[in-house]
Length: 249
Ligand SMILES: CCCCCCCCCCCCCCCC(=O)SCCNC(=O)CCNC(=O)[C@H](O)C(C)(C)COP(=O)(O)OP(=O)(O)OC[C@H]1O[C@@H](n2cnc3c(N)ncnc32)[C@H](O)[C@@H]1OP(=O)(O)O
Image 1 (tube, rainbow, N blue to C red):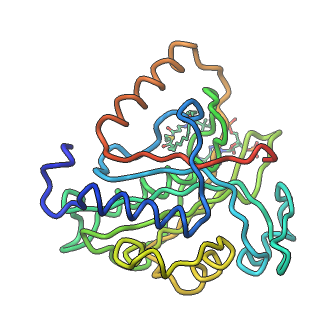
Image 2 (cartoon, rainbow, N blue to C red):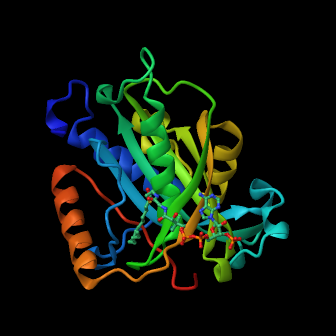
């Protein structure tokens, strides 16, 4: 789809300021282009960005996760215990081309964003034998109005490497405030932002997924094709961002 043709799309200025606020809010930083993995941005989105991150969330936010699952590493902000989990963020503007129910975004589009975010969290490195979606369960909580800014926040909560399995979850929340409010009002502390998000953000949908690592190795040709797809995708959309994946993970 030609991003410029849809009426009401955010201008480049509005979109970049939204991206900046998102970075501030979640404490994300960009990584070099060479670290980009294959494109997993749903192709129908005119405006989307994707970031691979390690969330530093207070244990309280993750609930029992920290104790019931063998999570990668434990970290702290000095005040409250927190846990670092592999995660990913996809932010998108969902416009009129995604019409489903009257005035609302189509459920398939929502599922695709959630799936892609968990897929990014699950595939932390550029690996042609990556994990693919075997099962995706989506709960649609509220109609997403057309013309919304949304953010999918995904993380991996469990792995069974011997069985080639990886379990993840994602929440799609309203990010309209980040597009509207001046950045001066936002906290630069990711922990505080995460705490607020867990309690206050309007939840549109959430999903759990099982990803399974493929058996057969794919050919080098496929890896090359994957980078070509990425090059193509980045031309088609105005903004793609990839955020850091700490070496510790
Ligand atoms: C590609 C990578 C690029 C990398 C570059 C970077 C990428 C950067 C981010 C990418 C993000 C992408 C995000 C979008 C992701 C998609 O949209 S992927 C596209 C949609 N998915 C597909 O097309 C998958 C199609 N299905 C398949 O290929 C195969 O069925 C699968 C999933 C690989 C499994 O086949 P298999 O290897 O023969 O699995 P099998 O040995 O039977 O089962 C293994 C285990 O998984 C369980 N299992 C398998 N399937 C299921 C199921 N459906 N339900 C429940 N359990 C199941 C089995 O029960 C078994 O468990 P245990 O008995 O061992 O406990």
